[in-house]
Length: 321
Image 1 (tube, rainbow, N blue to C red):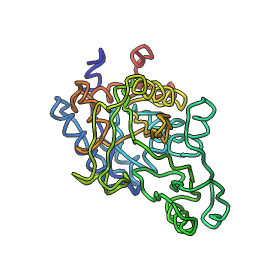
Image 2 (cartoon, one colour):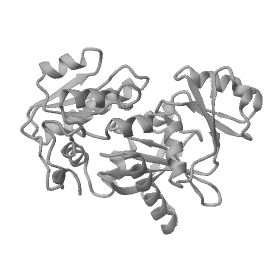
Image 3 (cartoon, helix red, strand yellow):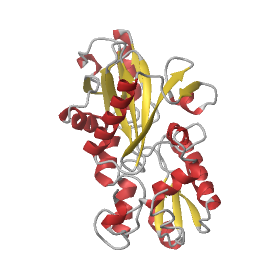
Image 4 (cartoon, helix red, strand yellow):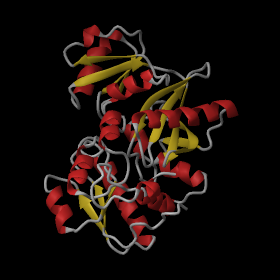
């Protein structure tokens, strides 16, 4: 347990959840799990706040001292709520405004990864009416530029299916990201306060780890620790930590990879606020290294801080390892 464990135990904790994004239902579960864990840990004053246009008023009415962000997707994971909390002077968990915005925009995130020599699949960006411009060889993965939980994602194996896949992705964003499909294994690395905890292999029953598979019991198995050669396991941990450092992530992010049949790692994306549901990967990874759900939640909350130097921010030496 961190030396700062329980920093906000005597304060009023607002768990921000729900929100208007396509991932609302997942966030509702995450928020309830987090609030329950905090109450079980002895945090007597915990308020669940469903995020909407009245969020500033709710935060004032509830007299929130610190926010645990359990939101997923747009207007929650993309820096918008983080910016509001900065303006209101309320410390919050997870990454700051810039890192949150960068990681939500898959194109900008990939540009940062490429500049930092972190391998990621080749990609193109296309608008809904420009699917004919895609030049990458098939198969490819088509996904919204800024969305999570595999919402709007398709694997395209036939050129005639490209236009439909791009239109589907663009239902959720202005552009579609088209990237080379990497066959092989899917893994994910969970991090906590800058440290890579471990690697899980994801084995979906259907072969595609889509939204339904992620959040339906029995649709995928998670193998921890991932049965990989030790050097490859360690390389995945190092690359995940490098990716998060390059993007400026804090708190408990999760980095998704594919491993090609040749054993090459490709970073797919960085999730700044991964799920905290009973089927979520980050809590499973933490549990695999001896960090129970309650401790995980408390360690995330203990790092809650303002990043603009205004009131209520813990001293810098209390924030960093």
